[in-house]
Each structure stands twice: as C-alpha cells, then as structure tokens.
Image (tube, rainbow, N blue to C red; front, side, top):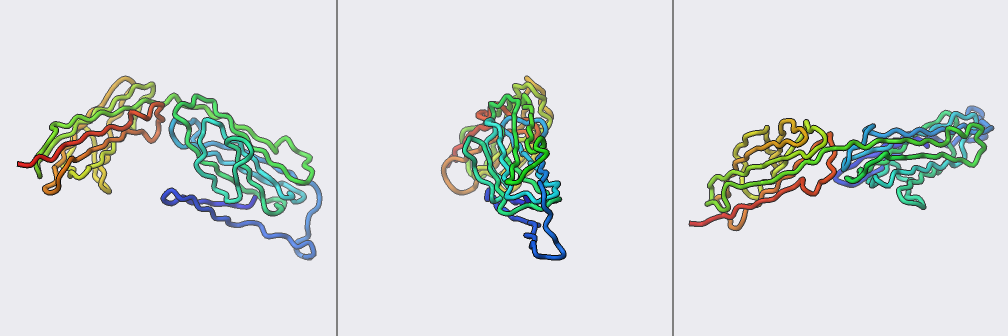
Length: 284
C-alpha cells in the first residue's frame, strides 16, 4: 500500500504519503516486471491492548505483498467495533464503507512484490462499552492469491472495568471584595471498581488569580491550574483546597470549573467528571 504517515494539529487531520513505490516500466531492462500471483497478507494490532471506556483506542493494520507478482489495485477493508467512535484515519485515500464503522482503503496503483504499508484508525471507546471488541481487516486484489488464509485478520480486545470519578466544589464564600482571597474546596470520589493512581483535576480561574493549594501538587499554566492527586482506591475520596484572589477591577461573578480525569483508567460515567461554582464580586 506504500508507506504512509499522518499528523494532527489543532484538531485538523492532515495526511502525507511518503515513500510511495514508483511504477515499474515494463520496457526497462534494469527493472523487469515479475509475473505470477501475489501473496498478500494483513495483520491487525490495537493500542492499548486492553481498552479503557471513554478513552482513545487505535488500530494499526499492516499489509504486505510477498510476491512473486504485483498486487493489482489491492483494496483494504477495515471493520471497527460499533462500540468505538472513529475519529481519524491516517491515509488520505481511505473512505467510509457501505456499513457502519467500515473503512475502505483502495490503492491507486499496483503494489510490487516485497512492498508493505500500514493504516492506522484512531477512535474513542464509548463509556458504556463492555466488550470484547472485535475488529477485522481484509485485503483483496485482482490477481490470484494462492495463500488466501492470511488475507483476512481478526482481533479481539477486552475492555477494562475502569473507574468512576466524580468531583464536587465548595467555595468558602459566595461573595468577595475586589482583591480579597477566597478558597475553593474540591472533593474527588472514586466509586470504582479500579484504583486510580493518576487522578488529575484541572481548574479554570474564571477571572480570579490562583494563589496556592493544599492536598495536591498544583501548577498554573495557560490560564488553568492543574493538580495531581494521591492515588484514590475504589470507594475512597481525596480532597484539595485552592486559594484564589478576586480581581481588583471589573464586575460580576467569577466562575471556577473543575474537571477530574485519569490518563490510564477509563470512566464509565463521565457526566459527573465536571463541577462548577461561582463567587460574586462584592462592592463596598
């Protein structure tokens, strides 16, 4: 299929074809065309090997032609599980198939013997997915393949039970004067069933200025405050307190939003991963 690479920037997927095989001229004395059937093969791998609910899952499909002849206009068909929402495919010639979660990747040229390539399908596992997730890939060509058994591959991926994180916010006051400090207490609970070792909470300042924190390692960056919590076992909770300062000018409310998540463990109930509170600016 050629060698392909892809990049993602600011939510925009762009594709670059690199190292595409040149068309062999049959009249060339130095590069004679090899005749005979093509021996195509396809393999499928998933990353991570155990899927997490609500998190990314990528399928890498590798294809090759062992020859001795060229594969005439081969077509790769990939079927991703219904429990995975496809976000991107890293080969520009791929397009949706006739059925749900089917990706069809036709090659615009014949593929010489010895050539290989790969296609990556990136998706998000649905929060309610229980698994196992079954994916498949098939490779066909217009020439005879005497070894068709490896033209089709299937992969079963299990889904982890994940965790159930939730966050609640409690401000120390409902109103504060310009320049005055106030505290926001965050309670993070893990309803399980998995231990979460890398729970993080991100806060938006909402016009206030972050001063300090207790109960977690916190740092401010790009207008947000990120906090790393201690491990939270199933059924337990962790607490942290952040001190903010009201703006010295302006009017209206200062809103603070918190989002809790884990980079390693999925969450089956993401609706309670966010919380919001506000403090009014009091004059006089």
